[in-house]
Picture 1 (cartoon, each protein chain N blue to C red):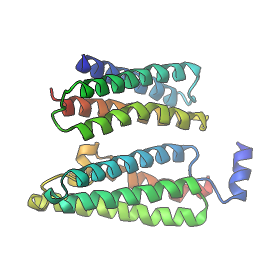
Picture 2: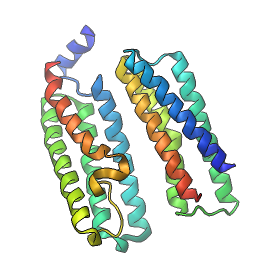
Picture 3: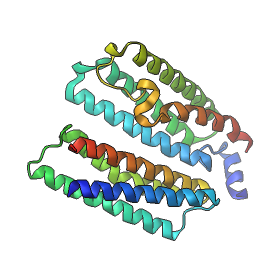
Length: 119
Length: 140
């Protein structure tokens, strides 16, 4: 369950990165549709955070330590919303670049989360 | 566009607009990454690799200061950020070379180990990009 969610969040993050990277290459700022995409990806990360905490509360132990696992879960949940807010204040192509960077960071965090939980 | 240029000239110029916004974001992320990494490792087992953990904490301080300078804007912040980016680049190169030459000194990795390989080499690309931006920003 948790691995399926990690995979889904990682792939969704990569898709968002490609989409906003495309906007950047077209010299466009982030539009409403991009923000809906960001909301979907953020929702996946928040669901992952909740399920992760529930699993921890249920007695599961991540392979590389609980503290690191929780830190990465929080980072994953915060990455795309934070980038989204910064792109709201930057109505140029560089706002799109910021979201692209945030989504790539989320994808990297998902890979690390997979390792930390234990494959 | 004109508005932001005028505002920029009144309060010193703005370093966190346009490409600078992306730099603020990346430096912010690396501040959090380096700080939380060193904090977690120091709390869990400081004795295992004290040198590595202290270096990560130092990197976090440098990243935090550059993030703050980019947001602050103006000539003095630009100069301070340039000095810190140079220090950051020197740190990445020194620590990167050090970890390759003497791996035994580093039982655990730092943010700057192997020139930041564990972080997609962003730690070595970031200061160079930032210095280019800091040199160009006042003219644009």
